[in-house]
Amino acid sequence: MTQTIRSVGKGAANQSGAVVNKDAYAEAQDFLPINGLDHVEFWVGNARQASNYYRALWGFTPVAYAGLETGIRDRSSYVLRQHDITLVVTAPLTPDGEIAEHVRFHGDGVHDIAFAVDDVRSAWRETTSRGAQSYLEYAEAGSDEDGTLRRSAVHTYGEVIHSFIDRSDYRGVFAPGFRKVKKPARAAQGMDLLEIDHCVGNVELGEMNKFVDFYRDVFGFSQLIHYDDKVIHTEYSALMSKVMTNGNGRIKFPINEPATGRKKSQIQEYLDWYKTPGCQHIALRTEDIVRTVRTLRENGVEFLGLPHEYYATLADRVGDVGVPMETLEELGIEADRDEEGYLLQIFTRPVQDRPTFFFEIIERHGSRGFGVGNFKALFEAIEREQALRGNL
Image (cartoon, rainbow, N blue to C red):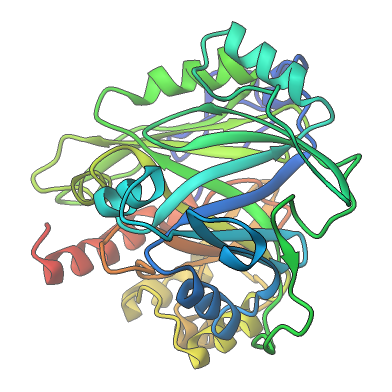
């Protein structure tokens, strides 16, 4: 089932059954200009170990630290970078407080998907006036000898927030309270992770359209693609998804909800174990998925596997994708094609003990889709994992 994105107007369906809005970028409103993703912050049980995991296995370089040694008494944070991707891992230093409660309730998970903006005051004012709940008012800004970092933040689904960050008057490594890591341990080599391609949110049954409306009305986003349960299903389970995007296309947020099926969907499994809606996975874009995945596998990162039957018919479905089919099968990489081009993608197993958050690695060649032709095979692979965990 190949996703074919045609040059069609709003609400038109393609051959796969996905509804694609080719005018989405033009329709997105400009009252909230977003320059891109500033960083993603995870709240975790042990920030030092999480930092070492992303350094030693994923090739991220630790660039900044905050904790007791920098005058921060309630948390420990490490900032890690690779090309245009900035991850922050933060752990509580005491058994009380917001971070400790978040980790106790959810396990490790995404707390903040932060936007880079030019005006945090305007961003906070525009979003809260349209219905967003404030998390941090713009009046609270941080300053040190490196200048002033401006920040505000609002709530979104579950306990995820969106911070608005303005670094135009800040020269420091990350933020006040952080110090530069002068001699970081050597990061793993061989990765080619360039930027965050998209962030996926899971919400409760019946809540998808609520948050589609939320991102449209509060952030000015527009709907890019709609997949219903006729597109995303297996023999046992199904889900529905709508992809929201901002005006410049730098932010893409698929929003998923479970659909009724014979057994429990991957979305419901996430909700059962994370306990609330949250960020299910983040896709990292690469220009060399073969080298990147081969290195990640050698480093110990675990990926979902697909059966030989998937690859036996893949060439007929997608044609030449620049990588031999035997190499794709060896590494477990999936491929999909639409009218704009093709993509290669692969998904990790959950990267923490609970079956919640995971990563996707994606390489795009023209395609702006999300691999709908792989959905059935992918979800069957996830169901095999769910069955092993006793959660199907």
